[in-house]
Figure 1: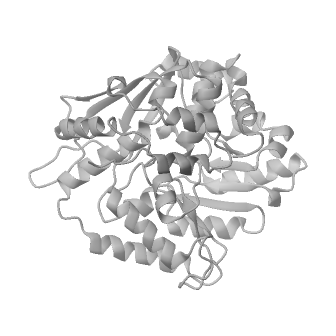
Figure 2: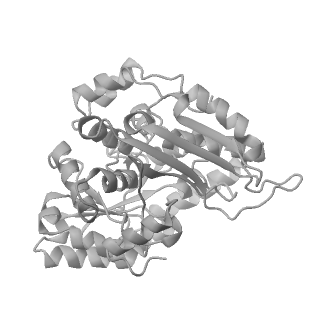
Figure 3: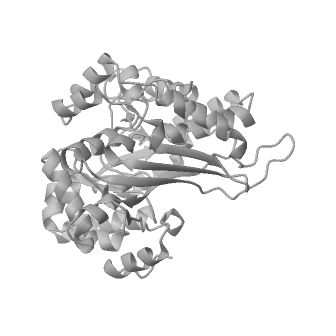
Length: 411
């Protein structure tokens, strides 16, 4: 059994789920799975990227996932978070994932189709553990003797780079649950990083550097290892607002205002790439610049994005040094260091590293996602600054979305 706790997911799933409970409890949604890797057919003794042979095993793991419920200690941990409300924890005490809302189908092409369809409130927690299941099932079948020695060597190199002179203020966070090699490897990586980089909870660590590991998005490991839990909103939240808000053009503004209504200034990091940076900056006016603590980058050129955000804050009479820019798009440690060196001292900085931390053992990782494609029967979409990240099953709607948000450069 790969997933043994419903806390083995990213924090932003709970923060979004609380908004859904309080503001959109009747919303109906649909999610679709996608593998972005170039398709390849397994050869004898090889791996490739065909997932169809593992569909039955994935279904069995999902069935086990749906047998789980929150334990008392887990609910108490969630209740201890300042932004989690008591009635939401009470609801989670009754919550189960229901297998009837998810289907896994092996396709003749060798790929798999995973569709999640049902009430948003009852399906939102599927995404992260299902992606973790697909990863671990795939790798335990194709890499039966994983090269942990190589993985540890690569992790050691990353730690050495982060501990270089002049980088003591550079802090990274783990965002790697969705695409980890395995749950056991994920935990090992976090334990090693905690000891060798130090955390906010261990200022006198043996590395001699206080707190270069800012925390983790994974709620289970945050609780288990005493790490800081991190996360706010994901793309699905702003996508759903395309169907839930009063007017499509105002859906991004509606999403930010609904978030502020729920959290009253807490969890104030705005996601900037659901419609691309240009559309984001048009909506992210002086009010939001002052209200939110910062913004997160997840597609497009991060250096250009950072410069534009700093310029935007300055133009809106906000000191960018008081705001946080979070970088989280396919980061490696060398790229993280480059970004830190460019923006240090000009704003607050945070870096979320995912796949490169939790799935770097020498094998090509699966680039898999599960994205919302419909809400209340209406198509919804993401139009990021990286066109390959776009996902929608309705081309006419995509064209309309580009027109409404004046998006001309996105393929």
